[in-house]
Figure 1 (cartoon, rainbow, N blue to C red):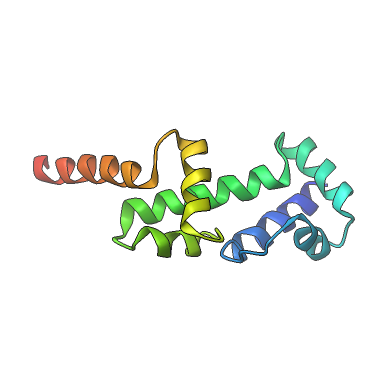
Figure 2 (spheres, one colour):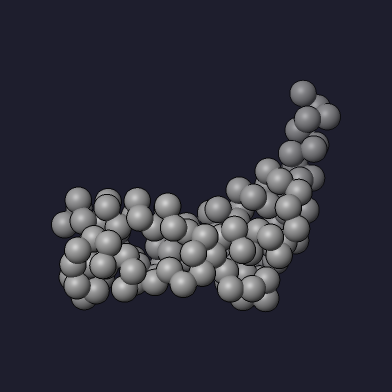
Length: 117
């Protein structure tokens, strides 16, 4: 079960930018039924596969927001969101702030740190 989850997570990481990525694709890659994979995720990680996809996409977005000057529309695509609006909704739901606000706050603290070191 843990090996199946690890295989699924690896596939997820490699295909995070794919807008059409879903539970079915991941289950097919892992060679198990959707329900089997959902149960394995729940047991191993205490989250659903969709939660894992969302978390990985948000983690990638936070990294891109923090470390690049890419436009938000490009970041949305790089993280597998169908459009910028959907990205903004999911990001705000997960982070309690907009992507722009996150970028501004992160940049301020990073710039502040550079000036004081």
